[in-house]
Image (cartoon, rainbow, N blue to C red; front, side):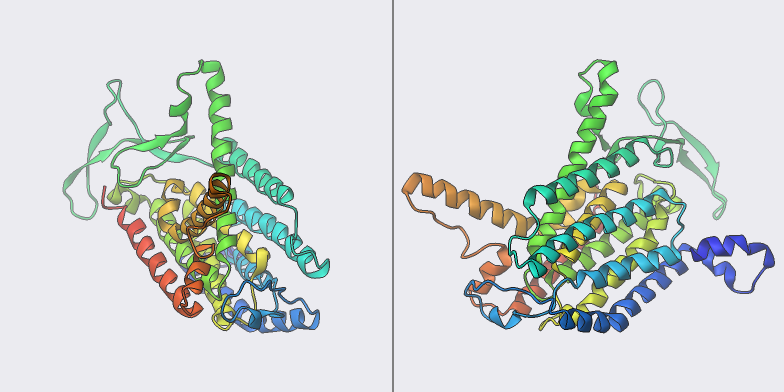
Length: 417
């Protein structure tokens, strides 16, 4: 909003206002405002939740310190949503399709999570929103995101042009800084269904590759269907995995902040023409604006830790966890790094897999031996370590460390190819 106001009065030449044209400044402002909203207004929202008796209902699972959490205000995800949306609307360019996709994702999944929390708290139904309605909401979002990315004219990538023999076309140009002759690839902006393959140089995965065997008249429809199915799967998997991770004080907020920072770095280099050329990675025009959104995202999650770190004064609930997971998923899809999600979101993957393995093994052994057996003492994975006697603050800290290591590995993939 402020950027567009600046463009309207740009001819007045107001001193200092020109700084609004720089993404770096607007991203820095977004993270500061996000932190301020979370820390300053977070306390007021917590008090409001306490007055309305919007407290967590806790089932006794025999975990240390678990029953002490009973009555702690939940639905704190409202703090996170406000801290993301307000700075984004203030500092981002609202004529950017990627920004609107992230705003829609945040509101869409935040609303689904809010309804789920509302049913749990006010209707006293521990099951919350029926699973089929959650899935329907996630599928609907996948359709919106997939259709926009596939058909919108502003969603393009800059690809290297190949000759008739399949070799990249190059040209010799003079570097403006060194004055030396250098070889540059010839490029063009095109609609594309390509995405990045980590650890591989000069190769991207094209979803169209999987439907090449079909007749030309069917190929476009088939690749569109495949693309939509993949996006729906990613959004559903990551948002639900983040939801499962939200079981200890500060765990989900801290790990999503680390993953968000990783995505921010990947988005910045993918949207910077010189860095993308230097790193030999896919350049995506207009993607740099997402730096403003991800800055607000990081500020919101880090700021939320002010009240959510052990011992938590508020829980984010599904209002926050579903939205955070969906944001990570859609953001990764937009910057064409979705194949890297299992790396920098490895903590969420491990949590999700622990539940899948536990349930599958229990059902298998019950059919085979007449009684169910378990791989873990309890799932998701963080509860396994609680059962082993680890204090939850130690578990959370170690999960953060693992998330940082995975983030570093993800950044390193830009060079190790």
